[in-house]
Image (cartoon, rainbow, N blue to C red; front, side, top):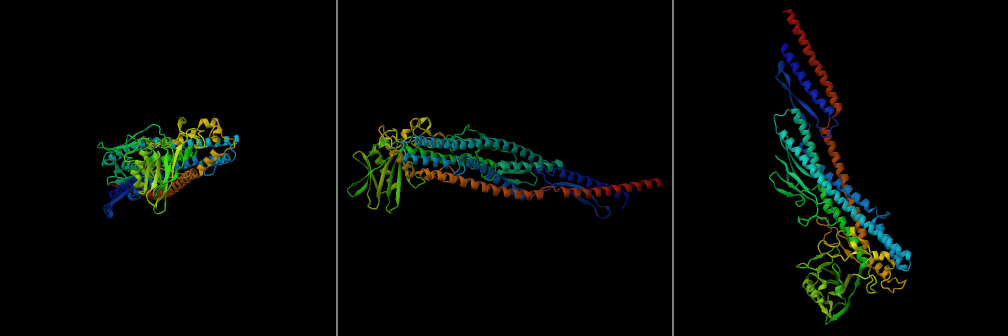
Amino acid sequence: MGLTVAIGNALAGLKANQGALEVISRNISNAGTPGYHKQSLNVIEVGRGDNSYVRVGEVGRAFDKTLQSYYSKQVPDTAYANTRASYLDRLQTQMGKPGSAGSLDTMFGNLQTALDKLATSPDDYATRAEVIDDAQSMVETLNNLSNAVQGMRQEAETKIAMSVGELNDMLASLEEVNLGLADYGMDQTTRVSMLDQRDRLVAGISELIDVRVDYRDDGTVAVATRSGISLLDVKRSIFEFQGAGSLIATSEFAMDDAASSVGRLTLETPAGVHVDLVKQGAFQSGTLGALIELRDKTLQEAQRQLDDIAAALAQTFSTTQTKSSPVTVGTDKGMLLDFDLSKVQKGNDLFLNYTDAAGAARSAKIVNVTSPSTPPKSYVDAAGTRVVELDVNAGPAALATALNSLAPSIDPALNFSVSGGDLQVLSTSASVNVTGLTARWTSQDPQGGADELGLQLFVDEGGKPYTGYVEGQGQKLGFASRISLNSAVVANNKLLVNYEATTAGGDSKRADYIVGQFKSMRFSSESVAAPGAANFRLNGTLSDLVTQTVEYQGSSIATALSRSDTQTQSLDALTQRMESAYGVDVNEEVARLMELQNAYAANARVVSVVQELLDALMQAV
């Protein structure tokens, strides 16, 4: 080996050592930087034998496409679970631990106890005052819970708007990174840094929405939702959010834009096409997906459950039931309802009980509406009761005609008619028995007499009677936020027992009636608890509704917390794998640094010795 070859090899080694030292220096200085991938210098051996030397190659970075894809899938799933768990945990805190002071079930239990005392001591002022106090506490509990639910929905709406801004910023940055990575003239060190930035941006986007990422050979990426909507290819799409302002209980999502009263989230593609992301169900997980689900389904379902309780509470007190009497016409048997149907208000109903040909107990409910749809709306509620909506105030004859047209959907053996101006229902089959036809109507006069024992203790906003009308969005929606006490009863608590002006002080007839309503009057959620939500519907007495709501919410938060823990553990395990594959081991880097320092010193010594030899040769010439 000649001296010139030796010094050339040594200088090449020095250059390689210097490049490697720079890479190690970057690794050590960025050991704690989130998203930094360990770098390495590729050193290439050139030539062979005595004339071989090294040449500095490209700077590489640790990266596993499969591992990165797993991470991009796990991040949104974890963010989704954590967001839901956080909100539901707060909701459970608002409702209170079952049985604890101030909880929903405790407030209801206190009211029940006070009513039982009232039935025993109706003439005691302190007992009547206790009923009013506990009723007010129940009202405040429902009001506060409803306000808390709507507050969380409003917060979710605000966070959706913020998330949209963050998404647009990150997609714009990722678009710029893609353009940079597509430029092959970029120096390698900058390129590697941009790849780190690319992965940080993808991780940030993944936390907000579920994405599918396509890593290309040139380092650029294409990003789409898991449902297949493109977010970034050559150009990015732009998220747009049109807020709805303040959300209240009646603010609900609807597929019809004109009927929807929540914020609208859309995506504008590079081609100018607008996609409604909520209607398309574009987000299956991620923080944004969880916020949309909470706003439109989960929290609104909680609101509907509170509304069911509030409505049942009002109707338990205010409903007076007028029962029918048996009637026989020829061989047909049934029931005759001797009652003025004009007392039945919007939302009040007629309740039919019968046994079918198989001997099974059946029921049907005719809800009073002023403008029935064509054909009349008909569905089965949570109790299995056939519900139809008809104009009861149209009179017995018109009502009987309408009911006969619907009889096949109830039971073909039933026949409705008018007798003496009153509605009657007969069975034309010996195997089908009509067992009851009851008018359930909202009492108006607090002292209407022994035939009107119901009392409007709980009323709607502005003292409006709660009848449960179903027109439009219905009176029930949001009632938990509006329910209040009847000021007339609060001012004169004797009305709790005085069903007429001459009621004796110890007469417990009204109190006994209301207590009986608590035990026997049953309620059911409509066909679906909330649009698109889990099909859980309340059914039973008022006490059952409270218990079911508390248990359902408790079960929901337990499930959400468990899923959150599971997803977090999975993400932690995946993060550890990534840290092992991508992370910087400072001890390992320091050991490598010492090796390079020794190699650098050896190469420097070769250069020094060759220099000395060359100097000696020059002097000898």
